[in-house]
Image (cartoon, rainbow, N blue to C red):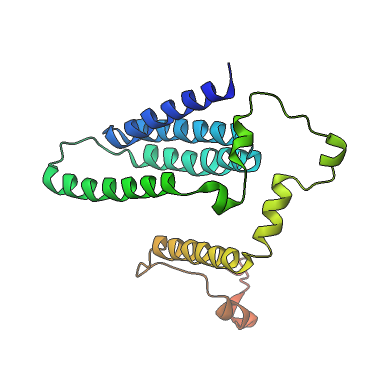
Length: 209
């Protein structure tokens, strides 16, 4: 089986799973299909040679975010109830989103990739194998090294801003989950440090009684 056939198989499974994510009423099943979408997307990236992004999808999205979604949905115990849906509003929003996606897809196909990215696409259609000298290739940086060099040099400011936004989101979620209830006894360190030890401990002679 060639890589092209595997690409189409993974793509079709991803599209079908994505449709199941938005169409199922059970949130647990939606998260499970979302995990299938992430796994197939990681397989497509691995076929395209982006092994760093592929394993990043598996570790971050499948290993952390999707599992977190699944546990949260199972802990909340969301009940399935009949919800009245205004299909006219959904159709209008879906029409605009589909129009935007169609325009972007059409613009992508009209783009001259060879001139824009400065690459020769005709080499990819060569039926004959291209021989590479691995002695010369081993000294070149890998995909992970190239992403790291670009991320921490040219896009260092964007990377720091994203980290700062995630930090604010984490602090905000912690603050929102803190329940400030009146009448709850809390530990006051300052009062404990400045207490008078002579008034705290009292000795009783039980034999006199």
